[in-house]
Each structure stands twice: as C-alpha cells, then as structure tokens.
Image (spheres, rainbow, N blue to C red):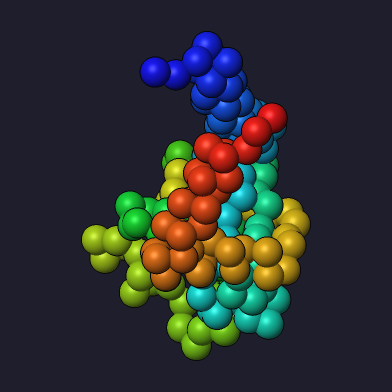
Length: 170
C-alpha cells in the first residue's frame, strides 16, 4: 500500500506534467493568434529552397490581409499532408473578385509548382497560403526531421523523459 506522501508525490508529478503540456498548448495558440497563421512555425523538409533555406531550418510565419507579392517566400497547403515552402514567382489579380492567383516555385527547382498543385490547378488560390516567411533559425528543425524519419529515436527519447519524470524525487 502506498503512503500518503508517495501518493502526493505522484499527484504532484502528474499535475506538473499537465501544466507543462497546457503551457505549451497555450503558447502555440497564442502564436497562432499573434501571427495570423494556422501554423506559425514550420520546418523545411526538403532541399527545394536551397541555398536560401536548408533542410532542417525552422521558418517563422506571419499572415495578414496584405496582398501576396512576387518574390515572397510562402508556405502553402492545398490539401496535402505536408505544407510546401516555396517562392512566389507570379501573382495575377482577378478583376471581377480581386482574388489573387499565385504561382510558386522552389529556388532549387527547374520548373514551377503547377505539377504539384492538386486537381490539375494551374494557379494556387490565396486561401491555401498558410503564411509568409518572416524569419528563420538554421538547422534547429533537424530534431523534428530525425524524430519523424527514425521513430525509434522518438520512442527512446519519450521513454527516457517519462522515466526521468517518474524517478525524480522533488
């Protein structure tokens, strides 16, 4: 049978873990509100934007009502599993609706992204733009890449953290 001090210790650790998780979620939701982007931080997963951005760089996104301009680096997701980070190379504004049609391309790619847009679209609609890149941290995203490409490392790390929480005597 557990003593009351042991029960109190376990409850304390559970509440502390819950507060850490809740704090992370609050910070994330706060960033979403401040930046206007549904995903304010993304990791570059491919080399299509080299030499400007390398695989593993973290991008900070911001989205507002200003029109998208050629030359800006945007993150878009038109229904795929993973968002794409590419540069806007052309923008056409429709006269009737004032909506912008956007054409993107990776800096290291030879062709524009028309072949990547879903359902044979020739232009990307502005509603698919998640945000504009406004800053970056080089190489910090490699942690995310390694954990997604090698899930065993993720499980070992989570297990070690869980063991650390359970065995700490504070």
